[in-house]
Length: 128
Image 1: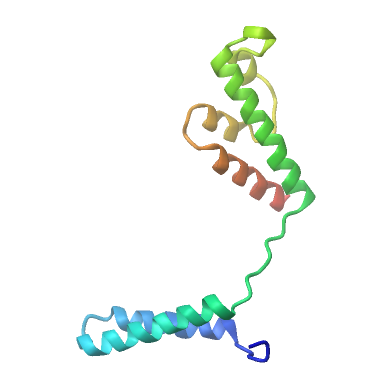
Image 2: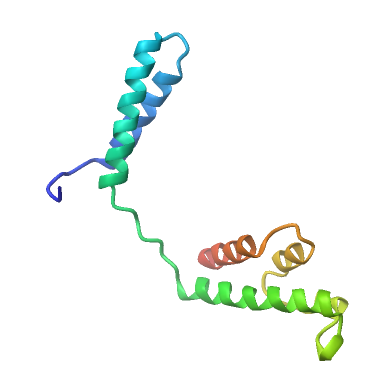
């Protein structure tokens, strides 16, 4: 299988064309079934043969992910403990300058989850 060379951009373009053809309601049921079969075959080929691109995670992205994970924990403790045991109060934490502050605040208000906050912080770090 290593000797099979596939032009993946062309493959994806051809697959998209078949999907568009299958979506055309003016085609007979039999034609749509045949097109669906070809699309399923292409899906299998793609899943079997296409080499996934390795995601590039830079040191800055890794650091941003670690930093925001720690800050999300600090925000959670500040909100739930409200200064008990020497922790920050939530108001003190809100006034603290931290990277990706908007994401931390959105997390503390349950507008986004921690995974989303970490992902967005890492994406931001990638573009810096």
